[in-house]
Image (cartoon, rainbow, N blue to C red; front, side, top):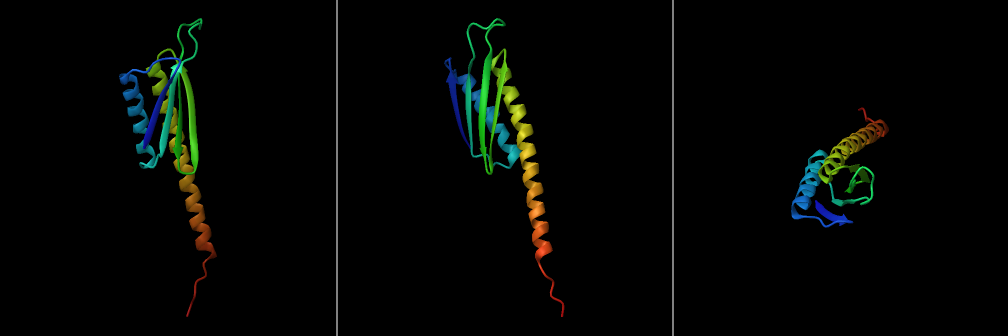
Length: 119
């Protein structure tokens, strides 16, 4: 899986890049190591926010058949990354279940169309 991490409005440290790539890589196990690419954008919304700095994390996962996207905000960057990971984990599980159901339906339709030859 390819992981691309970029910063918006701030410089990313090696610790943040490593943490984000570790979290993105952990999503791969929920889709049988078939995640193609993860693009993460990490940054700060505004330096003039009334509640202090608000960080955001956005991630786009490319998987066979669909692209999954999530965007979350939190008061720390690490919380935002964790929230993204949890959300995308549930989305990957849903997508995998939908694919499994459609493959099963296709197999049942195929079997219904086949004719049995009796001698």
